[in-house]
Length: 306
Image 1 (cartoon, helix red, strand yellow):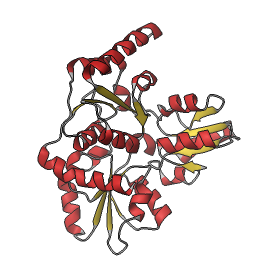
Image 2 (image 1 turned 180 degrees about the horizontal axis):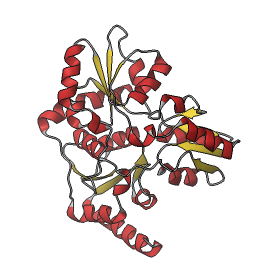
Image 3 (image 1 turned 90 degrees about the vertical axis):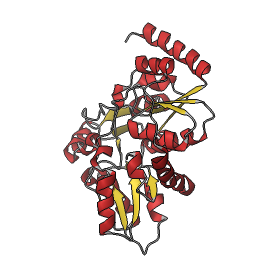
């Protein structure tokens, strides 16, 4: 899309936002032009908090389905719109409520922790949620005399274990985008940019995490780059983060650890779809009240801990 078309659509989106009393939330992995029209850009934790606090009547959630569901759980009186109804999360699909119920029967005394990258139905079966930004803090706060079931990301679960020493029953789930990053990719990037610090997401494979100078959520990586004196960074997360990294650190250099680090679901949201979402207030995401009442407990507990 050319710059003139981007400006026209962006101006129209800003007008419609006021007309609809809408707020646009966008994840760091969204396209640059989508991030630019957002009222708030963040990671899963920041977006969850914003969804809970907004006074808007309409939430346009530029992310994936589980994020819009979380907004609907926290703000049941608001209209929540996901610009592309097919923007899902393969990791979230790796666990469902029936499977989790069966696992809970095997460990009836366990505290169940779910990564926020899960469906509302799964959250309804859990005790507390977490994001990559607060996962270590959440798990560290739990009673030490009870086992923990952690779903669905085994890589994040392993990282939490290395930070807390808490043994957990880990689900065999993972993020397709992050799990595909290899130690060989990091070695190649370091050979090409020997002075660069390596930042990776805890959803990456443990071999990759072990090679990093910094392991953090997307917001954590941005803060690290801003605050660190280094001038070059190798980035081990979805490439959408580059837009904010370059805005916040225009005098620094950022290199993707791999060209494979692109989430096709995050990229399904386009400026045109955001525009149509504001016009039609569709496609809407809502959570049945029975599920919502159960699911909100684990999200509110997370926000209390955070």
